[in-house]
Amino acid sequence: MVAMPASADDGHDRGRHHHQGYSKVVLGDIQYNSPGRDDFSNRSLNGEWVEVTNTGRRAVNLDGWTLSDLDGNRYRFDDVRLAGRATVRVHTGRGRDTRTDVYQNRRGDYIWSNYCDRATLRDDRGRTVDTESWGRDRDHRNNDRGYRR
Image (cartoon, rainbow, N blue to C red):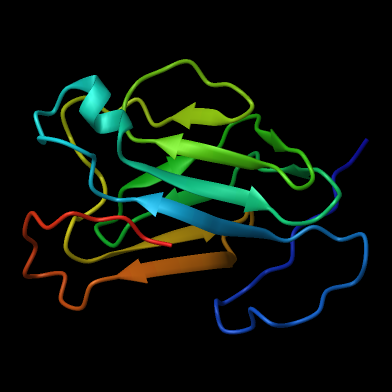
């Protein structure tokens, strides 16, 4: 069985109607600043995450898709099939991948800037599917609390 490809989106056509039956994959909630003290523990790293949501009814194969930040840190999805109307949460730290949670397996290094950054989701052909930004000037990063939706 082959999953139907998600529609590419440059982030400017959120109200666009898609053909019935096709799935659209989008970025959902983003916790870009781990709750509590940033102590670089695995628990703290996993408190930082990005949700990827399939808004359609058909499953989408995310194999080869990437999630990246402004600094070029990139996570590549490997063998992840996102069911229709389902969400997977991409955590920064280490853990065991499930249908609802996958892990970048980073050690002691946060990905998302607390002050300003951009999450970019690309399909297996490198086309931008969705982006989500926060803050204004990425050169002035600080430790403000961050949750984006």
